[in-house]
Amino acid sequence: MVNVKRIFADLRLFSRGYIRNGIGLFFGLIFPVILIILFGAIFSGSASATTVYVQNQDTGLVSPQFVQALNGTINGVRFNGTWPINVQLVDPSENFTQYLAEKSSSDGVIIPENFTLNYIADNPNITTSLTVYGNPASSSSAIVGGTVREIANAFNLRNQPQTIQILSATAALPATSNGKKEEPKYIDYLVPGLIGFSILISPMFAMVNISAEYKKLKLFKQLSLTPLSKMEWLASKVLWYIFLSAVSFLIVAAVGIIGFQAHIALTLWLVPFIFLGPMLFCSLGMLVGTLSKSVETASIIGNVITFPMMFLSGTFFPIQQMPQYLQSFAHVLPLFYIVEGLNNVMLHGNYSAALIDIGVVTVITVIAFVAAAKLFKWRED
Image (cartoon, rainbow, N blue to C red):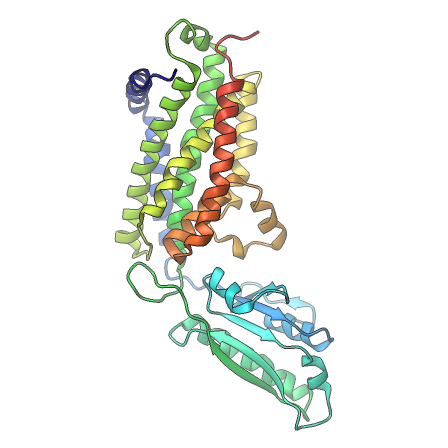
């Protein structure tokens, strides 16, 4: 039977040693603050390409050319770094307005069916139209609308009998924590990302090293002579890193809000991620450390697992800005669902999507925790 007193006794002992070790506290609490100050100072107020979701419902030859022009590709040359918008294609089968709502975006373009046929038709009575979605109060929507009109004018000059008509529509954004409808800034994405980063980095690296070193120094063998069970030992570590992650969350959120005016929501929906995240990565680190043959091997495997999650899960930049193949790869990383869930709760107010993220994280966490408790041994065979 699990004994709560033994868990808290081991927790007190472990926490004292952790606090005395300045390296653990630095990476657990100070390092995320350094990152938010550094990235916040670099990117606050900086201009970046606006992501525009484009649904091409046409099957002709002209619409792909129009999409390429929207994405800044002219005569095969992509104007990277200077083009104001970045196109993300949406499958024609998607409900476009619902898709924009799920992405918490107001900027989109629909190229309708028969766009090509209407454009090349030698009949001025036939209208060639585009629907541009935007938010009248958003500066990015003004940039998108102006860019689309300029490209449409260029296409009109190529085909004098026809003109492309721009139809406008408003896509409402979800309300932020202050009640205003605003599109997230870079700092708004950075705060949830760095919270996810701190949830990953401290428990994962610490448990990889602790479990590997305990095995090497035969400390597990000595612990087997005590009443403490494997489940209790692991549970005490999970509780400590939940506490550490909660403290780190409060510090990072405070720096983001006070120092950089981040617009993020602080709600009880954050609790499952603060609880499940450390539990997941404690268990995963435990698995890596105990199943590795040496401390060096454990460190290498831990880095191989951790570094892709650090940079490809949306911790520093929204994954929507990444190439499509990296976005697909991100969906197999456990940290993605924590960062995505934090974004859904703190930025978008999309709680139905957050529930899915919580469900995925819960399943992975339970599997990892049970596997860690079952597979590691006090004594080596």
